Image (cartoon, rainbow over all chains, first blue to last red; front, side, top):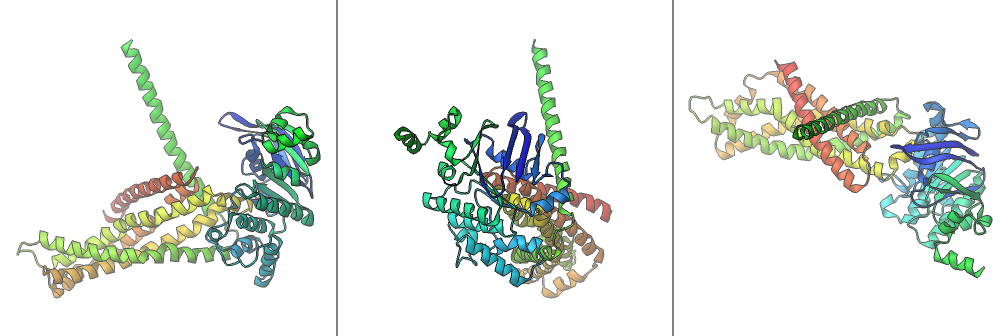
Length: 250
Length: 267
């Protein structure tokens, strides 16, 4: 479980996050949604410690991440898996080496054990026969899946995904969504996904946080979101003609 | 009224200059802060050593070709130029070999080669690290709990510091060969006069001095471009701009340190 307590963050006097409080539950896919520029990425990066917050605190299973010393923070980061928007795979390493990288860095496993773990992770994301290829030689969808495989290599307790299905076709996007949800359930992770894809919201949103202008605007789940009477959220959801039509038909 | 406007202009100009000075000190401070992170204790020595060998090959061994080509040509050109400026029959012929040797030993193979390497290796380092930065690969390392500055920059700095003196020695050798081949072919000097010249009044300290310079230049050639790449913000365009800035600044620093070291070690 990750608890965000009253965090605020400003850049050059411009308040991007305003006293945000939220709890992300364990074993669930938690979604952060909102318009571009609403503060989603800043919130995610603040939770990860890539941005230091101005006020408030972040707790990872009760451990105060904000006031942790660098050494303890580094240790905690080994419990975190991250999937970036563009995959952020290391260009100079093959698919196999990318997934193996965290194992090389943080474990004392034998070569065989690492090989086994790499195969296990790649199998889980349905990647076969691509072990020796470089990121530039595989498709965007495959890159995302390899990034997920690398993210789960160290068996993390927390998985973060920044717009994991942006730039993907609807079929691959759905595949990535269900993959993340399955892995969350299988490994009991606390998963936080940053997205503005409504399909993901409807498919896997077990807990949804909608933010607007740096503030928490709505909190709920996929069953409640389409019935909301929050005007800002309605404007966001029904900007998509398909959902607007669905709403009209209802 | 006119005086009043002039005074405002002067004040604005002063503020601009102050902000430039502040920016300069900001970069100096951030550079040393980055170095502090670079030289922090590595997470896993084995991986760093593997990375070091990779960088020695990538940045050092892969630069041998250009060093050999440039040195061969410059050695030949210098021999012809020395022969031209010493065409007076009163000058002994072996002065041509001596001049070529000392120029290679003292300045060309250390400073000029470092400037060329700043262009080749420096832009390579900035664009590699810069691309990693804009594609979030550096963020990815940080989230894993890895000191990205140390993991990415330390092996490059060590590799270039180790390899630049080696490239210096190669440059001197091939520069002399260039002179030996070109001089007699063009007919400005005989092989014997040239060989006698390059052994005449040899001062070993010149080589020591230049090797010391190469160590300093190696550090600059790797660390300054790494700084520009590590803190780049934006996209591919900014990475390109950072590469240019890195090469220009490294060149200026090489020349500045050349002056300082020459003053300290030769006079």
